[in-house]
Image (cartoon, rainbow, N blue to C red; front, side):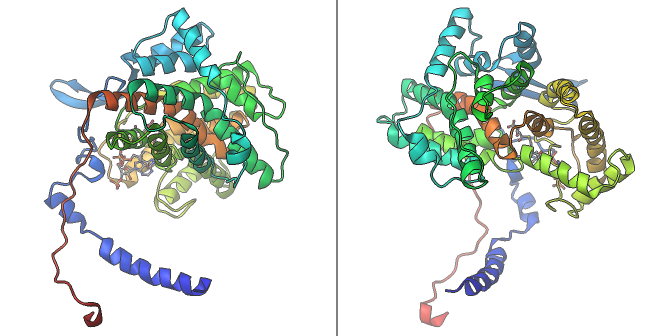
Length: 451
Ligand SMILES: CC(=O)SCCNC(=O)CCNC(=O)[C@H](O)C(C)(C)COP(=O)(O)OP(=O)(O)OC[C@H]1O[C@@H](n2cnc3c(N)ncnc32)[C@H](O)[C@@H]1OP(=O)(O)O
Ligand SMILES: O=C([O-])CC(=O)C(=O)O
């Protein structure tokens, strides 16, 4: 079949697909189906219990549920306190908070030192893995490259499908350690073979924290400043975990409940995270801001920026999907605490990097977008900037390439996925299987020659 014939076939058959896929929106209401597994107020259906984290976006006042500033707790500890704890003592937080999320308790000094050693000793790939897997068939989509590497790592594991606690913990710790290498080397391969840039593969340094090592692997001369590493470390901590219901963690629960191995579960979670409505939003935010700069004459003019935001909602600008990326959240309404914590550091970094003007534009949009969305959309609860709004801006200030923005999210969220996989395996020996009501009618079979 020629390319033209195939394309006209697809055009024709896509209409047939659509005609047989479409379901009357009113039927969802009629049969009480909670679209997106959410009720009319946007609240998710209860699908499980967890000890790992807690997200609060409302409180009860005089017996009534009212929206409040967002709060996030990891294993019972407020994210503000955790961040203050390691920052005030000038420590890196990734290793400590990973320990907390996986084991449920804050480590003492000895436990932390031992855990750091476990993580750094795991920062090694099987012999020739970089050459035989990562450097082969490079792609600009580093999330896909990461997924390919994870699935291939299964064939290097003699005990890949053993789902005992010890074995899954071993696999999770190993994956947490190697994620940065898989992603950064994947980027270097793409940058060399597709962009004709120099190829370099640096080894991690066992003396360094996870955040320092990510920058070391990435930079041609392995150098970075303390401020850069500290901001990246904070970003990792803020992205690590967000309850059982977010799309990629729920995917982790679903695939774990089928009895699958760790490599398959984490690959599935990665495939969810890359979506532009989830972790992939950090790339979209930066691309959207670039489009805004090229479309708006004076980006300091509130009215002109507002006009652009309206065009986004009317599907007349950028990717024409009707979304303002980095805004809104399935649970938070008034604020996402991660964006709030991040903002202070973003401002500091922007000053240090001479990007104050960009910071002012981000701040203007942070205020304007919720107003514009509230005017144009049917909103049950408030909309505010989410964690992805500032993260892409931060990564661009750290000279991290766009292709690595979502993979950096993944380097952090693998911790939450691991904790939830272990929790699902421990508690729920039941395959997740919700119901779909069939609205199709039964038909009598028609022999081929009579159709
Ligand atoms: C790490 C993370 O995953 S954070 C989220 C990252 N994603 C983004 O930044 C993408 C942009 N944001 C969005 O697409 C959404 O806000 C989501 C997917 C995050 C949450 O969506 P929902 O749970 O449907 O949000 P909510 O129930 O508050 O939405 C209510 C209405 O506001 C609209 N809305 C919410 N956020 C936005 C937005 N950023 N741009 C335009 N409209 C929006 C919704 O489309 C919905 O309108 P509708 O009822 O006409 O369909
Ligand atoms: O909770 C959600 O739905 C999305 C989110 O913010 C996250 O996964 O960090």
